Length: 178
Image (cartoon, rainbow, N blue to C red; front, side):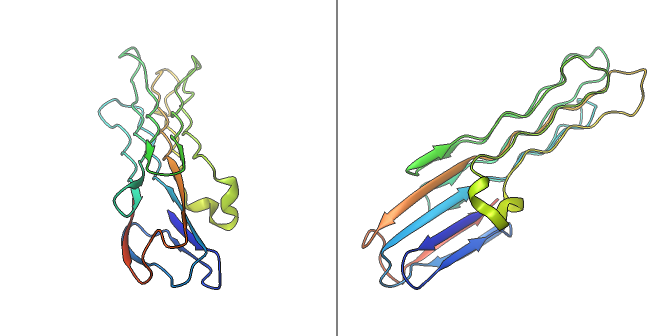
């Protein structure tokens, strides 16, 4: 998700649908604050052949980027260990917070890894459901196997505030939501 809020009468805009969008810099803004969250990685299946999907990166322009979390990796029985997905990487903001590592099994039978929590979600209020928490792993459902999935890593967070004149009014900026 990506959110842009300007001081003045222009209010804010939130972009939450994956894909490419256009943000038009408002005229006469006092400050313009941009917040960007990467998508969370998917939790894995219990089988190592089916890792979780990587979460999509989101960006504002070309330099303010919040990377998506990595997908978890599962294991079957004694094949090895499951792994949580890595958190996304953030760059280009005044504040850059990486995503959280996805969880792994802690030695319990059929206890799967929990997805990582996305950073800075408390400030979103009504938009909290739009951000990139990692997905939980799943188990095989068979008690006699220790088949468990790893949790996906969460997406990263970045925030940048532009002062008056830093961006040209009426300029279109590409926003990509992962």
